[in-house]
Structure formats: C-alpha cells, structure tokens
Length: 184
Image 1: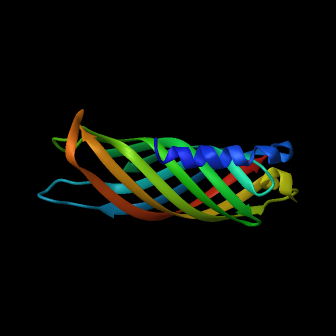
Image 2: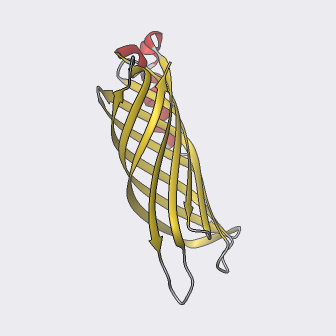
C-alpha cells in the first residue's frame, strides 16, 4: 500500500490536464523456451508472459491498470494485477507499475501457492499503424499502434501456502514485450 500512495499523489497532481484525456488498450506478449531442474523437479517447456494495459492518457502522462499472466512450462502460472503510471515523450514512454496482488501457482512440487507483490519499471516505444495519428491528448497515438517494451520486475513473495514467510523471497527479472494496442 505504501508504494501505491505516490502513484495516487502524482495522479492527483495531473487532474488539471484531464480535459485532454484519451484512453488506450494494449496487449503485449513475450515467449521463450526454457528448462530448469533441481533434483529432477522444475519447469520445462515454454514460457509465455502476456500483459494487458488499460490506460487513461493526458498529454504527457497516463494512469491505468495492468494484468499479467506468466505461464512457465506446464507446472507454474504467475498472475499479477495493479495500477500503473506512465510518462510519455512521443514516441517513448516510461512506466511504473505496482502489482498489489501477485500469485504463483505450482503443480510439480510440495508448494502449491505463493503470494506477494511486485513492482515494475518499463521503458517502451509506440508506433502508429495505417491511419493512426500522433495526438498529444491521446497519450501519443490515436488508432492502431505497435508497442515495444523492456521491463525490469521485482517480485516479493510474502506468503507460501497461506503461511507468512519469516523472510520474503525476492526475485528480479527483466523481459521484452511486443504488443499491439488501440488509442481511442
């Protein structure tokens, strides 16, 4: 909750620019092949991470929500959702996202579920397709666009199978996403 308060505060400062606001929706995907084993157990197969964003844009900022689903082989599924804040300098943008809820579910080990939070820093770019227009009041693009991003994510696992951990598990990773979106 403490990490969400700065996002809320900054969004309140941006309300005067709301008269120029527009909305965009994006879907990004990353896929790769992996195999991780320890003692004969672990994930194996493909990793597919998808992220959906719904963002309300001002002329140089965006405030919205995101949802992620990260499928790691046949044995692990991670889901996360929360608010996001975006600063835009066309065609580039910088984003901070905070997953208020992170859930990791396993089918191949004694651990069934882990829960916690996550934070993400993203650098990305958007390019209009076809008749898409660069429109400052739409967060940069009105119409169909391509989006490329690189995200640094830190996950903090606080509970395991419903019990609070003595010491949280912290996992940091980075990944690219390729996506398509539409600005209204």
